[in-house]
Amino acid sequence: MNQDDIAYSLPLLKQAEHVVVFTGAGVSAESGIPTFRDALTGLWAKHDPMDLATPEAFARDPDLVWSWYEWRRWQIHRTQPNRAHNAIAQLESRVPRLTLITQNVDDLHERAGSSNVIHLHGDLQSPRCSVCAAPHRFDAELWLENPQENRSISPPRCLRCNNPVRPGVVWFGESLPERAFQQAFDAAGDCDLVLSIGTSGVVQPAALIPDIALKNGASVVHINPQPVLSHPRESSIQGPAAEILPILLRDAFG
Ligand code: APR
Image (cartoon, rainbow, N blue to C red):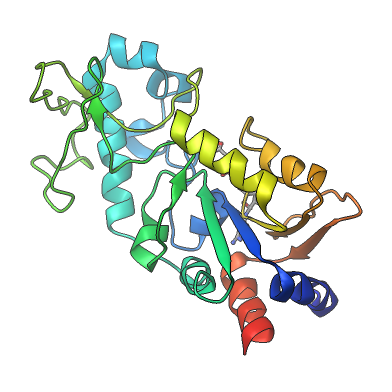
């Protein structure tokens, strides 16, 4: 980590009127949440993401797809928010306005205390009917079957139309949820600083968020162990988010 890079970001953060925090898998990495591909181990090792994360896969084998997402939800349930999630939640009360946009389908930002989290790629806690889209509520603490040991858990049925419930995530080939998309892109066009944290910035259209902000005159600070390319108003603090964010907050706001 380079202290100069943190020092460069401090005035941007202190002066910002509207901060967009844009997060990806890296922010949850230190909570031990495996990325989609990393989770394809053990019983799931022989599967390709295309077997599990497309509308066609769900139509072909709803039990397999539902079981996979229950397995992921179960893994996430056993983890805790880390210092990066906590720092982001604290930042909300330190700046005049903050919009939190995540590509993650976990609920660790909410569990850390962030409010109004925009889930661009949906989330595992919000399943809905695969036909009529009615939201389905499940008791987050109650697993009727152990997803670790079972690859054929049937999806519940919609209480309204009796069709299978599907995970509330965005699958390959699907559009982003309209409201989340609109809120995220409006915020990107309106903010003066984007903190882009733990995202490779390659998955579209989410990856456009920093570009839109730059086009509208905002600055972008990347927080990532990997180097990230640079526009003149783009800078990078290299290192793990759980280490850097608490320092950034302390140095900016005491
Ligand atoms: N702190 C900060 N960043 C980290 C850390 C960490 N401790 N560990 C890893 N990273 C960075 C990696 O260097 C990488 O740039 O997090 C980024 C993770 O990149 P991806 O795995 O591509 O995740 P993400 O950007 O969220 O992907 C977007 O792609 O897989 C789909 O739908 C899925 O929402 C996901 C989307």
